[in-house]
Length: 484
Image (cartoon, rainbow, N blue to C red):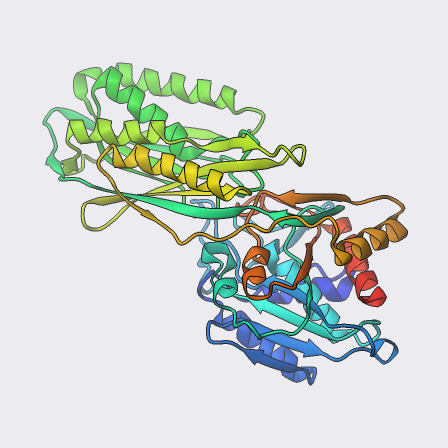
């Protein structure tokens, strides 16, 4: 049963709802690509797929615009798969069920997939609507943007022909983006030898839930709580005050999301149990007060649990926790050219236990200045290597330098003013877009990125602003009508 296609633009929202039903985690986009191929066949449109899975669907110019130059529309088909720990949802098989809440479209306890499902839906609507005026259209659907930008990395150099590209993967209506940050991941692996549990200890399960989280680029400067950081502060202080033994500590999930949840199992001497529980209560209350504005749903719980068989060596425990304490997290520096734009940041994304007595700490760094990105990645690496961890860096991806003389920028800006009677904001974004990678293989590309308003991307609080979708669609249609 259709839920959201009663709102305008109805056809676009219908496509968005159809997309939401199709599981599409990063690196598992086969179902959505097959769906789009079937869509191309139904509309008698030419298409081709490259080796990595990117799909290009082309549409000829409308009768009134046959002399226009090709325009490439681009969105990624994968979505961030984040959910609250209390929600039962299998992203590999279960559909996302969107619902309307006032002016917003949301999902229940999971990410919505508006990033970038709404861009995919808009492209489908362009391809299907034969009443639109436009030049030749090339719709590029890329894979695995969220976890590695793999589709953009692997795209062939002659996969599309247009020199104008509209990236539909931005999340702030009224803003035209003409640049983005580059990024790199820094991974630290700790090896440990488990020890037997000391007698006369009681075990407790500690959980942190309800944090707002968010996008590790767009939201990194907002001062939101990081569950890994908060849990680590608790564990380190409890180690010093009560000599607790740590059995397990995990938190966060994806490298491009701010950690929202963390869990730990600790052992406490029976004679210190009362003082320890009082400390836990005070810590939970004080932390909730600290993050009352940014994370009003923060929840800190302590429950007695069965005694595990193993614990960390105390010297390793302190060394490991101290390294997490020293690891920077958040905005590091601000742009000197664009007011209010983060230049460099780092995200302490997750701590996960492996099956061979190892712990993987995942961090991600972003910057619009390559040297600054390398510098903060090196600093993060030093923190963990000094603590005995093995370090690996990802290949990284380039930024996209702003071009204020861009022809498509002028067309988009004028179209926005004519449609809505106000000037759009023109800026860069502190997030990774595929545009920088496209430029490496298509150096003549003139690009711009825009989209409707999405809040809470990369978290279960993700929501899509309904009125902004209409403005996003109207702007896209007008740009295509004006041509190049």
